[in-house]
Every structure is written in C-alpha cells, then in structure tokens.
Amino acid sequence: MPTTNFMTKSKKGTSNCLNVKEFKKIRTYGKGKLCLYAALLLFALGSCSEPGDVGMELLPTTDLIKVGSVVDKNIQAYTFQEGNVRSDEAPKSLLGSMNDPTFGKISIDLATQFRIQSFPSKFKNATADSVVLYLYYRNVYGDTSTVQKLKVYELQQSISIDDSSYTHNDLSQLASPVLLGEKQFKPKVARDSTTRDTLYQLLSIKLDNSLASKLITADSLDMINSDVFLDYFKGLYVQAEQVQQTGAIISLELQSSSSFQGSALVLYYRNNTDTLNYAYRCTSFSARLNSAKHDYSQTAFYPNLNKETVTDSLIYIQPLGGLESKVYIPGLERWRDSTNIAINKAEIIFQVDTTTSNYRKFPLPSQLFLTVVKGDERPRPPADYYFYPLYYGGYLRSDYAYHFNITQHLEEIIKGKTENQGFYLTTAQKNSQANRVVLKGSTSKVGIKMVVTYSKFFQ
Image (cartoon, rainbow, N blue to C red; front, side, top):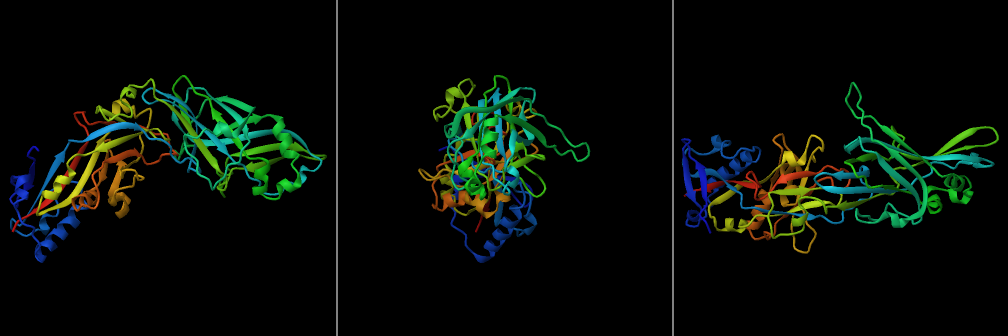
C-alpha cells in the first residue's frame, strides 16, 4: 500500500507532514480535558466547509492537537441503468418525448383517474355535444420547437391510489386499443412580466363522442360517489409518440386545489333549456401513473453501460428509472488502523461536466442523492442523512459541484458497524423531474474526490 501523507497545521501556521504509518504507533488518548477540546473542535469544524482554518482559537496553545486533511482520488465510478422507480402519485406528472443528444431517447406516458365532484342532476333528458381533455402545465424540459404528438385511450383496467406502480410498467396494457383522440402541439413557456413566475399553459384534446355518450348515459347508481364511478369509467391513458428531433418533457399540473382548478375531463351537453358542461376532476385522491421508455443504443456511453470493467472519464445520471452511478472508494477500512485520529469531516465531491451536460439548454438537477450499497438489501442513505439532510448535502453549488457529507458513515466503517460496499448516485427527484447531468468520472483530470479533515492527538 502506498504511503499517504497528511498535511497538518501547527500553531505558528507552518505545515508538517505526518505519515499514516506513524498513526499506528501512537496510543489512544482518552483524557477528559483533551476530549473536551476535541468536542469543541468538532463543533466548530462541523459548520464550515474549509478544513483546518477555523476553531483554532478554541484549541490550547500547545501541540496537543493538530488538524490536517487528505484528498483521495482513488475512486471508481460506473454508469448503470437504475431500473424501476416508483411513479405513482408523484408531485408532478410528466409527459412527452425527447431525443436527447447525450442521453438517447425517452418517452413518458400517463394514466390517470377523473373523479366526480357532485351528482350531475341535469343529465336527465340531456344530449352530449362533445368531451375535451384539458391538461395544464407550466414547466418544459428540452426543446420547445419540436412538435409533440399525444394519443388518448380509455383505461380498461382499474388503477388505484393505494397500489404501487413503476416507471418500467407498460401502461398501454391497461388501456383499450381504440383511439379516442390525438393532438400535435409545440410546448410553450411564458413568464409573468412582473414576478417572472412561469404561467400556466393549457393543452386541450378533443375526444371521440363515444366517450361523451358513455359519460352522459351513466346510470344514477354509477354516479353515487367517485369510487363507484371509477368502476364505470376507469380513466384515461395518454401516450407520447417518440420524436425524432430533440423534443421535450412537460410537467403537468394535474391536481385541483382551492386556488387552482387543475386538469380535467369536461363534458359539454345540452338539455331542453340550457347548454351546459360538467368537469370530471383530477384530484389528490386520483391515481396518477407514469411510465418511461429509455433507449441508449445510440449513445456514446452505451458500450460501457452496466459494466464494471472499464472506468470512464464521465458518468451519467438520469431520473425516471434512467441512469445511476455505482461509486466505490477502496481502502476506507484503513482508517481503522489510524489511532489517535478523530474524523472531523469526510466529504465526497462530484464535479459537473458542463460541456457534455449542455446545462444552458438542459438545466441540471438541483440535488443528487447518494445511498449506501447494502449487498442484497435495499440501498439506504448514509447515517449523515438521518442526522440532518442539509448537513448531508447533495445540492448543486455555484461551482457546478455536488458535495456529500459522509462523516458518520466513515465512522461506522471505522468502528466496524458497516461494510465498505460503495454507493449509488442518483437524482433526488426520481419521478417528478426530467433534469439529468453528466459528471466528471474516475479517469477525468478533475475527477471525483473525497476530502477527509481530521484531528491528530498527541500525548
């Protein structure tokens, strides 16, 4: 094993090199006074991102404690397909198709329920005129100049808000093959001139009158309440046809609220005296499912995808059951041999490749998520996340980097409470945002690095 030097800072500001082999020769220092100094130091350093330059005024004017840091770039990272991700009842439902120049093709479909708000008493002796699906959206990810094509079908199988659904499920299997309607459109983005908030955009799709007839002829027993009605009309499946140009994903505003009517299916009808309409709402109680299809066959990274034989200079992170990175840092167990050492902070830093990410056209994820590999068990966040999510980190910084604090996780490895099996890196918003990112990989000049700040105690 190569010798690693740790740089320390003395009370006079000079630097001293400590060889890691020296740590093994020093007995554990456990006196109460020094423990108090160490506690004060850890408290001070925990609130600062720059190692070795804060909290020094709390230390005694002796050489009992010296603070240093080490940078480890011996990190392995690979790109894998993430697999199934929960897609039901996401905060925002996505819809559309992209031919991403870096990440390949993706198309996202939608299945959703519509609920009755009250018994439509005026349906008696009424005649249906038309039925229209209205979908609201505000945000668009990708190229708004590409024409999107949507197709709408009626669901034949029930979906439930209590059931789990995943991005790789084929929602078309739940729907009738009979086309109810289709729509070609270019997504729009507009902002309020004063607040600069994005404005709601309305997408309307006129559906076949056979559905209008079904809705208006529903028996009164089928309209007792929403649960009974959903047995009669199970909802709609909206399919996004794969585009050949860049394309885009729209973020739907489906749910109604006290201040927003939400997306709806509206029946227009007339009786003997009036021309009326009735809205079937998509509410917070409506099941809402997404499915996503990915095609990476034409991408630059495809030859190395799902392999741990070649470390690439780039790693790729994409939501909706797309791409994740498996990260491994060899030798974390070696810190067990370093006696009289306290870990003040351990941080993993991932740098964005801004050129390949093309972040001006494709905004980056605001946060990534780092979980611990647990063999055959489900990956879990490190202990630092449960201590305090902001302390754990993962947010995009102004220098286009994502920082993760894994101090407590490293301490668990040192104490033998957990094994060093690596990490998975994904987007934090896996099912409600389309934002993706390319990061500098293991063989990049900048690369991934772990910075460990420590205190060395002397007797």
